[in-house]
Image 1 (spheres, each protein chain N blue to C red):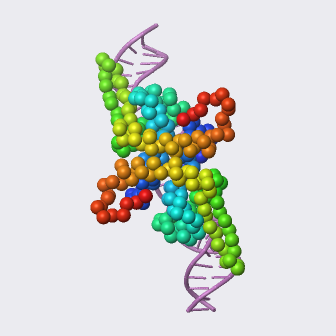
Image 2 (cartoon, rainbow over the protein chains, first blue to last red):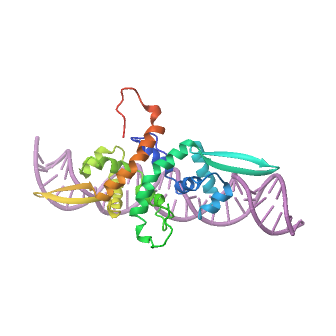
Image 3 (cartoon, rainbow over the protein chains, first blue to last red):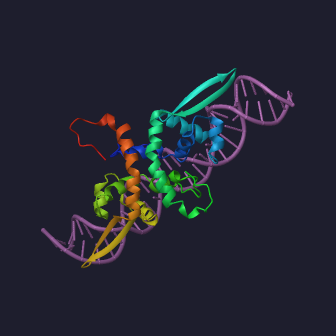
Length: 117
Length: 117
DNA sequence: TCATGCACTTACCTTAAGGTAACCACCCAC
DNA sequence: GTGGGTGGTTACCTTAAGGTAAGTGCATGA
């Protein structure tokens, strides 16, 4: 998605932040709590390492996630966490998620099925 | 934006519907009431006729807008209107629009300025 | 008669997003 | 010493979204 230079309203700016192919899935995953790179990769089937890193870098630049590097002894542990801004973004996305689940996914629902977010 | 074959949650499905470059602007414009093709084109500076038609066709296929063709005498009048589903989508987008306006556009606000949606 | 408006369609082109696959350095366990 | 796990980087390629510009048919107005 090409970054727009000027935004005419709040939504197209927000869509720009959140419009990458895997970004909402990353935000969704991080909503449960911090995750490490490998956990994110395994938690989002289909995403490649390259795209995951670029998406994470962009979300970091936009202030949505923070990247926290630490060493246990000499082993790298990189954790990604939602910033307060990211948390507020996820809250703002919730109604859209409800809408999509209700109107776009409803035909896939089985009675006993665990409902997706 | 490439249509995904399976969605893992409601939001990525919704983003798919709404993720075209000009789609939220179209939805925003139609929120005030039905508009004709030329009115939409003039109301969304920068969009080309080709992209506007493809976006409108996709929104129509997704059940978000309805296309109503009528003839006044022999002159074509095509009006685009939000369907009830489209209205509900716009309502679900409102919090995201608020978020974007607050966190992404706030630095551009002048005291007396008309605030964008 | 010519231009203009309406609502498009068509052919062509550019660009950037995303995918593929290999490679990197470091560390640990077997 | 080799295989696997950590968290990536790099070069290359494909594809589809979007942009450019011209053309279309019909009607009205100057």
